[in-house]
Amino acid sequence: MRRIPVPPGYLDDLNPGDPLTLPAEQAHYLRDVLRARPEDRVELFDGRGVCAYGQVLSVDEELRLRIRRVEKVEKGESPLAITLFQAIPKGKRWEWILEKATELGVQRIVPLQTDRTVVQVPDERIPGKMKRWKKILTSAARQCGRSRVPELSRPLSMSDARESCEVDIDLVAHPGPGARLPSSILNQSELDISTVGLWIGPEGGFEDREIQRLKTFGARPISLGPRILRADTAGITALTLLQSAAGDLADQ
Ligand code: SAM
Image 1 (cartoon, rainbow, N blue to C red):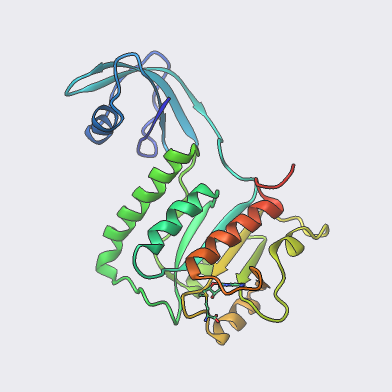
Image 2 (cartoon, rainbow, N blue to C red):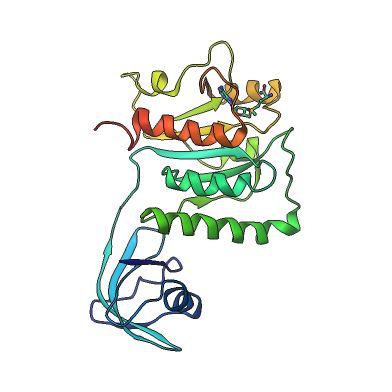
């Protein structure tokens, strides 16, 4: 079945049996990219857990569907809600992180501005960047079968990032004495953890004072093994280890 992302709220007033003319962008995607034909089955998803299932009626300038059912669906969503706080690396690596983090079930992403973050996005370029980044998240969610698109924050300083959401525990990837593998923290039976803030430093690492500050917020240092990983590898490895320790890559 072909999956088409639609804007949040777009499916709210739909009912089974309704005909629907898709907006131009979605019509183009279904007709010209996915090469849909009359009678093909289609799933529309709004990125917030509402899906509509229908069938193509006609494929011409206007692409028309008949809606069969509309329902709330939680597909591909982890019981461990992870917010990834990550400094933006150079070049295409950030976009790769957005895509892979979505595939690994991240719930929310906060681009971090740290002291050593090389990529500082000027204010006037933020709306354009956010639009492109959201498109990457939506496309990754469509491809991997998730019913929700991860939330994306605008770039924030570490203090603003910490204040932007509440979590049960913050874990900061920082090799060194005292850092433990995520599983040995998350699997402690006295902790009941369903929300995690995962902090990944920039290419040059966090400054010592930034680590101290995160520790004053209660963050616990985690190790990602004996080798120093590039920032993009570190974020994706940490997400995998968290999902494996207490999320949807763990034995239930
Ligand atoms: N020279 C930097 C340093 O010593 O901190 C290396 C930074 S590393 C390229 C980028 C980020 O990835 C680090 O700030 C940390 O958050 C994470 N990281 C990489 N390897 C790690 C490891 N083995 N354990 C924990 N965190 C790691």
